[in-house]
Image (tube, rainbow, N blue to C red; front, top):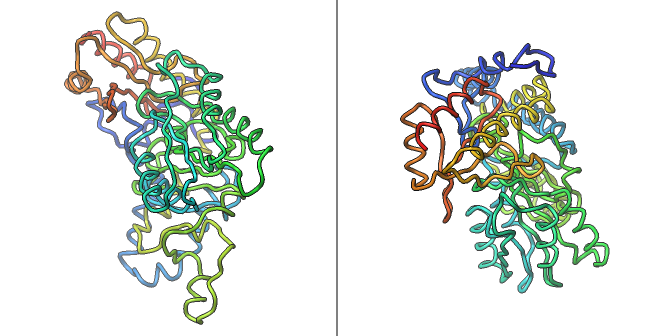
Length: 408
């Protein structure tokens, strides 16, 4: 199983034992929704019991402190100040808040790609309907498996026009498993922005959920301005939680689209009748208000702590190792087409493929009959997806390999 470069575990079996997953099947769908690991489940149960006993008092006495701890943990994980972190309940909500709050003027242009997911496309379309902005959707490559970083960066850069104000991308495509060269894109965009006035700078938005919890890269190193991700996938966080991280210039540009009770300044201004504190944006102000499943939000700290205990480099290398084992098997099997690039530089934990003569949903169903939980990407061109995580063992990978051999 191999040693973990972490503090509290001898091997990956110790990690697997934290998850109450059924043992009569193999879960290869980490990209969808997690099983709560024991530290997270215990925290949720602890907070829930306290809330059930004294709901009003416990909330009054603890919400601010515990929510600050969540922001601090998320900030430490991403390498940003907690004031740059907003809390949401999913990637979808984060993307919607950011693109709805981007101050487009009529005729401003946003570039996205055909390879992006419906959440990005629809959030941008709705923003364009409200503001008169123009959404341009470009194609990045003919096939993900044979694409190169240079090709992707060049394709995006050549699509920029004087009207471009935002580029909206995805870190790891949930269709093919392509991991975008975001750092190279951000570096090239920096060169473009160096020739523009401050008001015309192009910002970079990122659906980051399928890299978040796998790749050990800080927010600053990625180079994006908006980072939106749910915590209930690869991070193994509480279901119904998510984060937004925003750069300095992103905070200066973005506008809140709904009230946040986390921001006491706004509430105070409303009570006293004073002018609202505009122009001083932060993560508190961008966090949607309302009553939440607070026990889940507060337990987010345990998910970040678990990744620290496992060692983020170890999580990244182990996830890539398992995905590479699957890609090697699939690539070497006659009758199978693999969509995901073999290189770890252009892939992460998603492995997408097709079996010749099989509809993808039929392949997934045949795997399910053999106890393998796969999924199918909901795109115009569907792929079967196997998405291993550090919860999976080498033996489980071998069982998946055997099941694939049976259905080809």
